[in-house]
Image 1 (cartoon, rainbow, N blue to C red):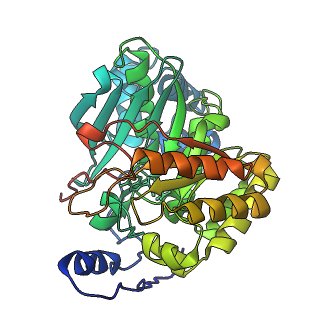
Image 2 (cartoon, rainbow, N blue to C red):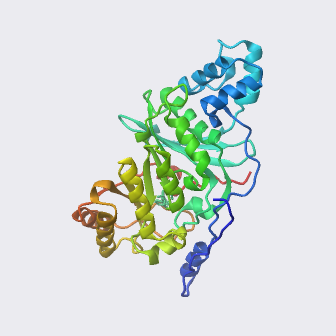
Length: 394
Ligand code: SAH
């Protein structure tokens, strides 16, 4: 997005402190353009293979040095030039200074689920913080990465959205979260040595508001080594609040990643307050863009729905959701992912009771639409959906 735009969502009316608190939170502005802060130094992971060769040539080195460096970094997940013993020492120093500056350093690691869920708090060159979450399963491992420090989308039930946007992360900073997670999983941090198979852009930030850096990161993540990390595009999910022009741009990229849309309710009236960007692009426009994505890629779109007690969990909303998805996306091209609401500081909202959740699932399925409840990991370490806050004061 190139110009600065803000749109105040409709504030709630009524009296009482809870209502006022909710209105105050919902009144946060939408921020599409990140504050202009110093971005990190350039890094190998910012660059395509051709750009890497050009960068190496600028240092007065032959192009094959770029390929060697890529084999270490993307192929062996090695970022410490000291370990790259096939490179002459003087060359190593120059390459490190120019192309491998440390971008994100782990400040804190918290784990739960017997070590199968690990949250890392990262600090960038300017002190800004962001979090990622690595989750181990019997047959795979997933990392949930941040695309921005903070988020400008102002969703009132999300801790990240309530903290505001600090800055965009660079492509290198995003790829580094993935590389370090892949190395940690390989080295057995989850118990058994595990191959990182999935990357979800569901950490802090709105990925499509940091479009170019995120798409470049997806390329680095999915291209086979040594151009990239070699993770299958099928294992990569980009989640969005529904920035319609950016969804269309993504459709045109021809990347076979899964698109997730944070819908949270099928009706505009409620969505205008739950997902304030709905004031710009309505439910029907978002679903139409999701349909174009699904048609172009053949991939099922995932619809995210955080179930909030007595807010968006009514049977009629389940029926409307099922019907709209079947009609506007076709049952074949969509899957609903229900997320029991995770608690966030200061929020008066809760998850729906189990019987209500079960009825919701049954009604969506009755419309012929696939619906599952997400196995939420990491609640006790504030690592679950919507809980990443990272206390980002540098
Ligand atoms: N900005 C993007 C990427 C974040 S993904 C997006 O919104 O899609 C994080 C997912 O968790 C989103 O679907 C978000 O709406 C959801 N979420 C946020 N807060 C939550 C909470 N408190 N409980 C459950 N899900 C939440």
